[in-house]
Image 1: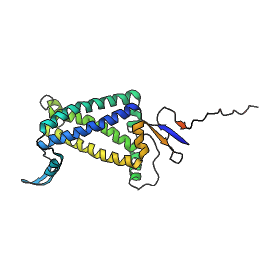
Image 2: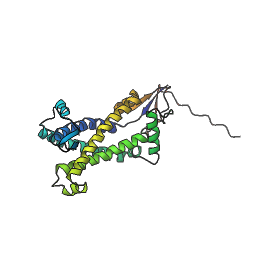
Image 3: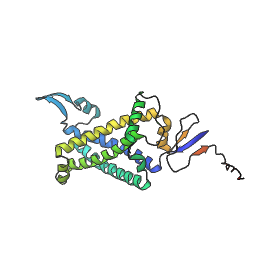
Image 4: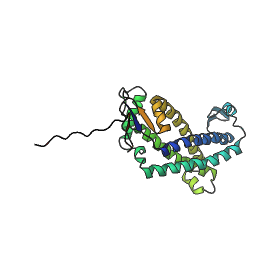
Length: 247
């Protein structure tokens, strides 16, 4: 008998899907800005051995000489990114969803088990829960990275007005490097996240679109993680359990 397992509230799904195009534009516009000065490379004297982004990469994306355009897009979408992230954090605390996201003392052990299973080094599949240990660590880290991106972004965009923040982050060069490393982290997370979604299958993707997952009788048990009850298809009346008579 098929069952419907409620997984993701509407607000969580909205925050998730709004953040995807916003972050994409932020990374794209950041490349337009980075083109104007890309210092991260390996050089010997005046000879460059390895450049993080070769000239052909910028040519392929058409990113040359678009600094002003990149800064305009980056600044506008920064506000959308920040407001969406702030609304997400407020919602998770008000709704109690933070309990599913904040890692606990078991999360790192669960993360190791999930990683071993994903790489085929563990045969037993970890139990199905809303967010396993690896997901908790990843999603919580992404929230912290979002805060870091906003702070480092302000530090390098307004280093004079926010001189105290720039100094706190180690200076302008350090803040710029930190901002760059965080962006690389987003890209790596995106590819790992997509890979995990593909491995988890269509039902997992559907749950982030519709909010629920249809579980077949042959599927492993997936307990409901929200207070909403698990609905069954088709619906059957629940008969009271007879109480044995007391002698």
